[in-house]
Structure formats: C-alpha cells, structure tokens
Image (tube, rainbow, N blue to C red):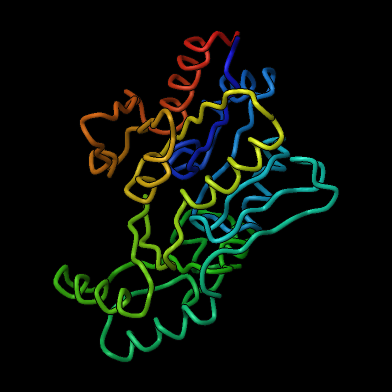
Length: 267
C-alpha cells in the first residue's frame, strides 16, 4: 500500500528561482503531485496576500503557511472547511514594529520593508510594484536588510531576544519574528491532514534552502535541502539523512520530488 505523502515547501530559492521567481522548471513534479492527489503546501516568508496571488498563478488551491509560520490559511473547500480559515501565531505586526523602532533609536542600522515604498521595494527585489505592495502587507513578521557591522548584528539579535523576538536569516533578507517558526504551522496542518486521511500512514516531505527552513526540515520524515547560497548551513544530526539537490531552485526541486515519487511507487 502506498503511503499518503504531504509535501511542504519553501518558495524563494527552493520552488521559485532566486532571481526570476519562476517555478516553470518544477512543473513536471508539481503536475505529478497533483495527478496523484498529493497535497503541496507552500510554507514561506511571503505574506498571505502574496501567497494567494501565487497560488492563483500556479493553479493551486490548498492550505498554505505565510510569514514563516505567522499564519496558516485554509481556503474554503480544503480539509473539509466550508469557509476560509486563518489561524494566527505570534505577536501582531504593530507590536513588533514598536520594538524595531526602539532598536533603531538605540543605534541599530537596518532597512525594513516598512521603511520602503512599494516602488522602492520593487527596485530592490525585482518584483513588480503590485507584487511589492502585497509583500508589505505583514501580519506578524518584518524582513530587513542589515546595514550595520557583524558585531552590531550580534547586539541587535540579543536585544530582540530580550523582547521575545527572533532574527532569522532567509535566502535574501533577515526576518524579525516571534517565537513561532515554519515547523509550527506545518505541525498544525499535518494534524488537520491526519484527521482527513484517517488511519492512513502519512509521510511528510519538506524542501528548503536556507537556515530559515531548518526547523521545518527537522520535523519532516524526509528533509530535502535545495542547493543555494546558504544551504550548507543546514546541518542535521548523524541519525537524520537529508536528501540534497545537485541543482539550485526549481530544477533541483523538480529532480528531488520526482525521485521521491518514484521511490514511493507514484507514477
């Protein structure tokens, strides 16, 4: 009997190309997942507004995890939900921004998304202006570029920790967030999938490329590290074997997912 698979994936640098944001190279594996009824759960630092638009473009209708686990969104019709459901984790965005303002007044040097207009953010990221505007609609996290020294960064991280916040390195930006992480949202959704699938054995696959994905990968039955600028920082205990892609981004994602589907008997 084939086990029921559930796939959790990071976006930037993993399913999406780090520079073009394209997922085209991963389409063969995405289509194979859809044909076999295997859920593909996007789990990203992106906002809910960004991810809704991305799912529409991808033709996906599935639960997703936004802002590094700040919110789990279950659309109507998914997991037996009659209505859209949004489950929040962490401190509200306005409280987080008050802490960042205190740190800036104390001398911390950074540029956050809230400091930039949509057009400025578009220039910085290569996003279109409408996409950049959606990226600014934060619920409980704030991405930033660090402009200080390494020593100042250590002090900044310590100060955030005293305020109950964390600083996590993503593929391109640092992310200020609460004590939640991508794994928390994944655990919540996995319990909901288990309710839907009943007694069927579930195997979870998680794919990521940066330290921001560490906890999500550790929680999965099969962690898959996609080659990238910071992927070598993803290390696991000797008892955990992680699959590592040879190619970066969606090309590596496609190859790893297709190999795993064959391994578990999915055509």
